[in-house]
Image (tube, rainbow, N blue to C red; front, side, top):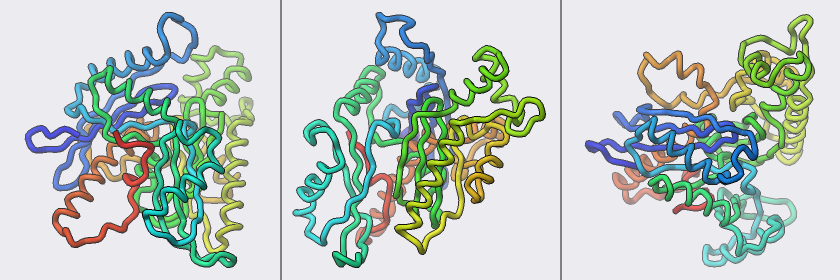
Length: 374
């Protein structure tokens, strides 16, 4: 976060497999305002220059993005891909906070394959549930990631002159920008270039997160193979607005999208069994492939639920002259927007506590769950 002329700036950086995206927000009348955004596409070819490591290439791309954007802030909120960490829940007997740390670490060993010395572990008690067999239990949300992965992002920052404010899994960034504080049960389907993140959110809290090794590139590959065109042409056709689900003569079957839908159905059914009183109200699509023509109707029919495009820009004010560009960017900047909003929300919470020091902060905040604060 930077303070230029008394105005705070918040920089969110999303390291995607297809591109690195950044969004910079400021505050005006306590409302987040878009002041800057940028994207640099990543060459996904492996081994082009064996003398240059993937890490160095990422640093070079980030430097290019900074040079183009010239952000006010040198403090950044960064996200790791969802598959870089684990998110899970445990139920523990009611206990004092002093006892909780050891209990959480004991439970974490059951879920985490690596030694706890090799990971960063964060947790938050999000509520108390009354179970039929064990009575009242604390519901604890745990987040973990390998220390070596976290160190990699620290190096990205150091080599580019940035300071990491918070490093989190993109799961929370997505939820912050797309669902926000909306009450109810929702499912986010975020289809990235190489991977898909499925997130079930109940009253603002991530309850289930699943990662699938399939994404937009698999859709491109189907178009390429079916029509006998180059990868570049197939990518262009994917973005052309043509509905390949229903177009006569070119109707295609996308097994990757079907597998994503099937996993979404399993998640929803599993959660409904454990929580029969709840019902998913809406499905949000996110990621670049969310703009693929016909995909909203496809998932509406498959999931038998209302499916809509997520709108990560819903909380943000921006110049009306940017309306066309914002519409084109759509959900592809969901993670970067969610990261910048982390700074906005944190500052708002600080102001609230300062103005009312007697207030007990009990409201759940994504800021409270991070992989590691640096």
